[in-house]
Image (cartoon, rainbow, N blue to C red):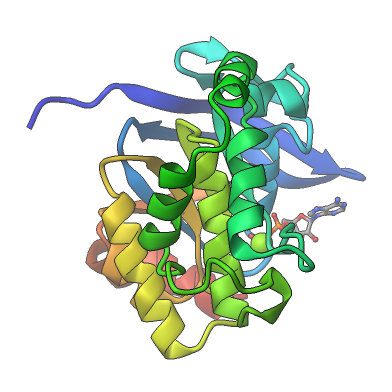
Length: 247
Ligand code: ADP
Ligand code: MG
């Protein structure tokens, strides 16, 4: 397989909260088309790392490059417009509106302004809305109020809303949190369908899920990258085991 080009590169990225180094000289690279899992014990700095990449928190040292250009000084909105989408744990769907209406809004609030104008001039993209619903398994729920969806279905709608913006890089923080085992399996299937078409960084603690989806797993501990490899490689790594035991 040809070498894939680097999409995201963090070099010696550091952030501290009142003197505590939550992320400490972190080097981290993701290639275009990768589905990368980021794991590590509680407090390892995983969520903070996603915050830094999407501009929600500011680095105090180092560099974050996206498509070869530094982005760490950009405002959150401009980072989103450059093509980095973030799924937060708290859903942002409109509960009173139907799934279809949520997706229509999601498809029209594309951060790419030109694409936006283009889309408005062409009216609502029904086909695109239905394709997204099918992808996340909500094709039979299009006319149901989002507030009526189960927790897992709400998460899938959230994922569809991010995909609607077609970001080059998608960041997800514990997408299976609170899901039933069945919903987690469905989510693994969904992520396997996204593989290769999107670049994703997925923070997860469910190792079964990680095993089902990841090609490469990065392990963070105390703000640094501790290990990287396949799910089997990192779970056999003595340093990784020790990090989890000590947490
Ligand atoms: P993880 O997602 O790996 O569990 P986090 O990135 O949320 O870890 O947190 C890393 C460390 O930084 C934790 O010790 C946490 O308490 C601390 N931290 C995160 N955000 C803040 C903040 N806004 N203010 C102070 N401390 C924070
Ligand atoms: Mg976290």
